[in-house]
View (cartoon, rainbow, N blue to C red):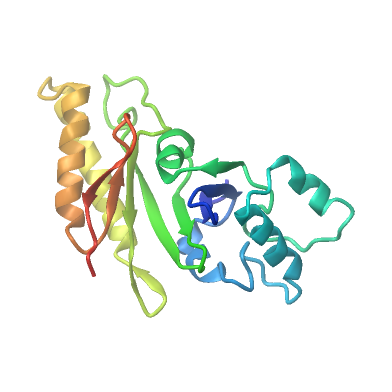
Length: 220
């Protein structure tokens, strides 16, 4: 099944190039594996091709040109697909229109100086928590929470996911009992999630109107 993630690399113009990783969400390992020397998370020693490709993408190389760049070359496998899914996007556009909060387990943002921010995705869909909700949108319907790190390891990541799953279970019951409308349920999820994340982590929630809102800021 994989542990699917999306990775956004900042370009020199402030926009982003969006890439896919089939296993990148596992233990949020891409936070450490993406470096200036291994920009796509590969472990090979000869990574000059990756550094050059990402530099060209950062300067505006289009997706269609990547195939020609890689053609005929024996490239080692990388955790992140070198060919982007899309280019020239804003972060607002990615989190609202490209990120699937059910199927993408994590989202990574890579700055031009290779500072990597890891976000865990939290899906707002309630179809598995309610007997009356038949389906929920997966794209643009959720939240992104940063993860606290200690000694190179994520702290409290599983705990937050467990808390959120329990919160959704309660909200699903409230919908079934007629206490919440779907709209009210979403607002309740957003508020309670922001309370539980607190100020130690950053919480980003697409508003549906772009840009996304920052429900809680990390000022550390």
